[in-house]
Length: 292
Image (tube, rainbow, N blue to C red; front, side):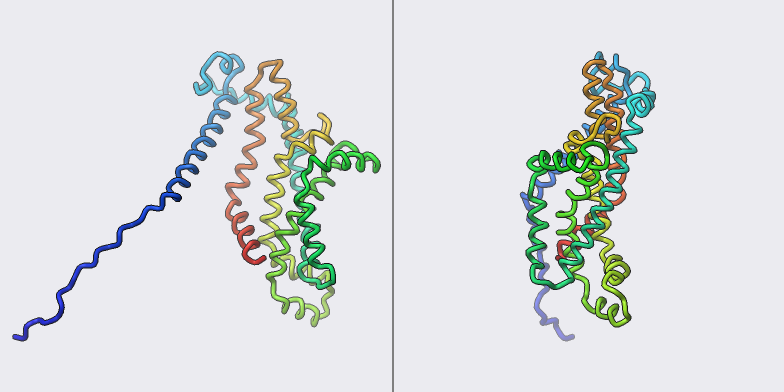
């Protein structure tokens, strides 16, 4: 019998797993932030279901004796939250959509049409993103006054469209720069005009960027308060401004549960939109950053 002269097998020890301390700290901070956000949201829900007497006499974390769903009806009808909700939806959807469309045209020209001042125009749009709204609001108000639209939804829509153009153009420029030029050459050979090439070929290919920028614009305009405070009146207010009026009224009437019900009506649609489409937002913004 031939003896086994091979070398003895040595069991290889697994390397010790190194715990990244910075990652643990990051996770703990995110966990604490998440718990604080969930706790605040739960507290708002509790207050919105109480009566005014319970709000003033019981603990903030105490459950209501009976859920007062009437608070939501009162906020929607008596506090005019329904009208504020409609105005916010209109300016956020229409303003965000038009801003993305205008930005797509500008981004396509900067990214795909070669001309002498191409980079200069791109930097010009980027500079517009750096100017704070508070510095420009007084000149903007007088400009709107000169053209006869100093108050109402019309000047607010115009400002919402214009305010989103610098950021949207910067993001969409990266998408259009990443598209192959062979598509435009093939369209030109087939006799397509530049506008048709943009509208039917290039624009659909940039769809992830269009969706992500629109959603970011929608979320921003839904929560916008400063310009709405300057250009709107109570009869055509948006949700943030309407909640401000409700807060002022609550100081004198102590009807805080209606205010918290209005806050939930304002917050829940945005949370639903972000929860359903957060992957689309992240994927679109990441793709734009990598391609640009």
